[in-house]
Length: 316
Image 1 (spheres, one colour):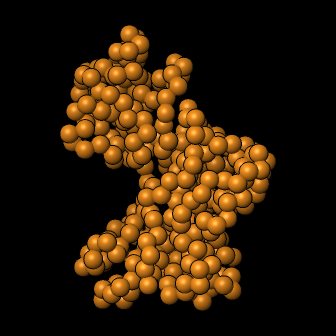
Image 2: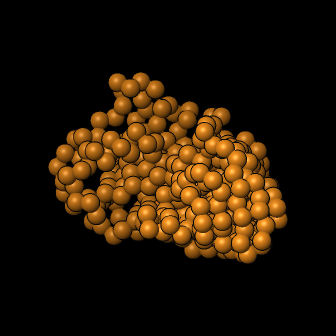
């Protein structure tokens, strides 16, 4: 799969309601884990078989373990749900080293906005700032109810609580938190937001008059890999001189793996670019969030994209 994979052991798993958990990982051989920065994520191979990105919640100085906050996306492909439902204390997982697309930039003031499981990378940021003695920040954390609030004890702890506004809407749309008073007047604060798509869109709308470089978003929601109209198609592998049929309910990547091909991948949701493959011929249905229009002429992300019409010839 990937030579960079690291074997880790689940040293603690705490369920939060039926759909959330907090998971603590340590290197199986006891060595320090790779360095990371606040806002980073890892990709983990899930029991379901796919790779999925999970943010790190601990202070980057703590390298003897990683802490993940995980939500089971019940409407997804099952990767995150398998982490919540099937992984137990003592189990071994394989992960890739941390990457960061949500970097905490140096600033005098911060406003953190988290919704649901979006608290995870922001916890890492808050922990780093507290360690550094930087207390000019505010965290607004919204969730449906205390019973589904990940890291509830941590945000209510004495060191962080003075900087936190915790809001529960109990599923009532009329009780959603009003962010406008915090965003009405632009200033020097850097805003970091991570949470459900509707909340992220609201914050984008309300912060549209802020300098673009002061507003930061993180969103791991994958592209729609499966679609109702998907049909089987064929791929010809030019280097292998082999033709394979891709079933309507399988990706190119999954089919090739079943055939014994050792192919690199990471997110398996069309967002990282690791599985980029040469497209020699054919019209692809590009479903990734990575390739430019020009790149789509000669490349395809085989974890999510398919043939639009006819068959494909790939550089494999």
